[in-house]
Length: 167
Image: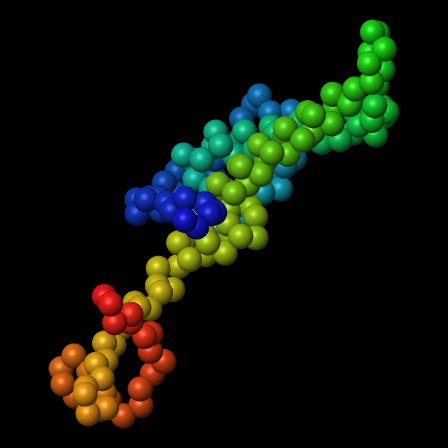
């Protein structure tokens, strides 16, 4: 099954009528900056709707937490010694990795990765429908002539798949 953003229901364009979703008050400064950076382009592309506000806010929050963890990583050693003498990885590395994982999930859902944008373009552009796959069944007679299912002689025989005679 293909990955990328899930197809929007046919009624999704009607949600755009609600306008650009407002940035939630609970987001911190870094998350608000990320909201301002991406909200308008995503809204104009028809990706961000009022129904997506919570998911986009969660992405922005994860982004903010990731930025903070990466900054803290640079201020602390990568390995720490516990009071009992054990050496362990800095907790900021785990926090950064977890937030990056969450961001990746939200990014895929919101069309923020190259792969999901490609798939999203297929969803948003209904004129780009794939051509139906057509098979032409050709039978080879005992006289060596090839005929289609209607009995017409086929001059230029396309690549064929040989069937096992036992079938």
